[in-house]
Image (cartoon, rainbow, N blue to C red; front, side):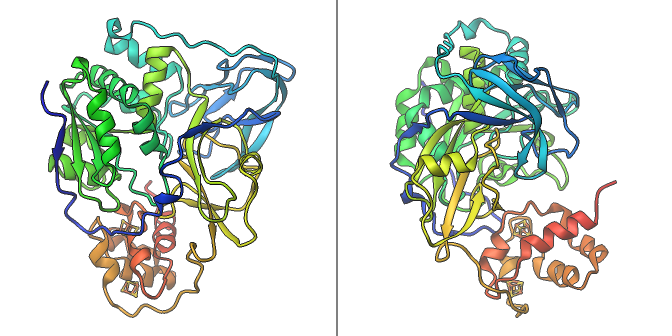
Length: 444
Ligand code: SF4
Ligand code: SF4
């Protein structure tokens, strides 16, 4: 077998080194949260469209078994939704959503006496790539750490953009988050098998798992789990730098290819999937198990007990907080995702969807809550932007309400990584100015 691990450098433009704060949950094995009495399963688990892309296929009082289909897409960007529990449909109504406020959903009373379903291993190596693709679609697999883009669409690149390389994003460069790290430590063989499956679907001979050099135990676990069927898979060990896990930065760090502005990775022959998605592909193809659980990190000094949790979709923030012993009196901010790109929330009725990677409970000392001041034109925001943008000028125009003028500074290329705001000594909300400017300049 060829050598697995190869040392790489990192992406070239911008980037930062924030404190990683991963020590709070890094050594905590993935723990399965007991199923609560009731779950609120959103039928829109994605943040791609405000219109409901999925409609319920069950009615009030329907008996459900774990893994049963409860929602079918009515939009090409929607995906199947499955019940995360066995029980009875209490109601089909609207439920909270972290981005879209309220979306259609199915509320289920859990039946604890129902038998656990068995997801039996099958001979996946005899399946064709096309058969695997349709299994992935039926299982409702989406990008498990981002906007929830349907994986079956991402694995069907346009004919005029042939793909020759698969990259697995195992950088997990956001501070605090450890769920991908724990999956690599605890399920390295499943990650490697999932990678082989995606390679077969795409018809590519080469894949790299991109992992930062602060995760030597995960590198070792992957090395040891490797078998003859993983020969085309390499391990790209990258120098730590945020935002290495961003698609464009990861592609450049590993392949040297530069994705053109406004283009997708397929434009340079690459497809990127993250660790959680690759494990979901493994479970769908090897076990026939649809996506109805999520592994996420719950961390920060504002939660009584940090954890890496496997939870059922539709479990609410309140149920998770209660399970982990509550919040601390100095809790100042709750963030979904990592602290750099995550979303602040205050509604504890929000249920977990397929795209959650973490829930952070931050105290005042951890959260940036300072008032912002005027720009002192130090230029730090420009020097760290991985897209080569000028957040200083964009924020000045946005603050003056001159949103059209921000287009000349390439505001649409901003992917909201937060490097600029992190470095700003005046604490200016540069990402919010970027977001606002993009919203005021929609692509028509
Ligand atoms: S948030 Fe946008 S402008 Fe700021 S550093 Fe990241 S890509 Fe650049
Ligand atoms: S980092 Fe902040 S203060 Fe410095 S130039 Fe950028 S916006 Fe101005």
